[in-house]
Length: 235
Image 1: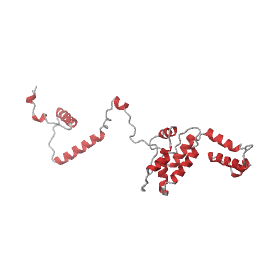
Image 2: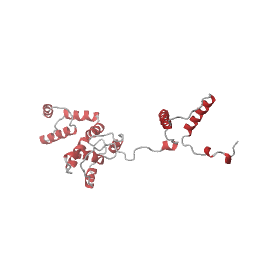
Image 3: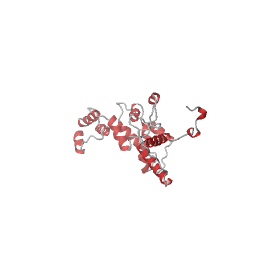
Image 4: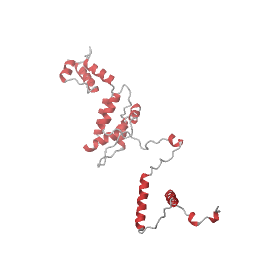
């Protein structure tokens, strides 16, 4: 047995590829037991190239490294995105400036998702406000996507946040999902029934009845009634 001070220096050297060295030692011991003697090669450069190719082949056959170790504390931590937004901003080369006055103007007309609120009326007001801000034609869609989140509050804002991150990729997609959520089928059936069964009040003037009929149509613009059918209903 060798003591610590009697170990040869060559055995104390650090080996960065200890597994490969161990395989070579086992292969050499196996050949020595079988009586095979390794002769020095006449082309050492060729041997180096062969060894490099063998090492590369061994690395290719080696299994992938295991994933980094995670503790129970890591799984308990929130791993969501740092900057969450369900709306994807379109790529544009134009500079679209969002002034603080625009945000204040949009925030003053918010939709909260209550049953007494009209989503079509909210969209009409939103379009009017954005139209007064002077955006160019190429920046209008970008402005809709950027400012729409400021026009929502309460239950409507929570609905928008419930979508996956970066899942709403166009303004048409946002508008369709907004109307589908807050203008339910039951509400659509009732609004269309009110138009179909419209009647003028006993003491209601003709002009007031006509204005009330137009308001009912605006609350359900996708009623699907032809102009002649609307005229017949009002008559």
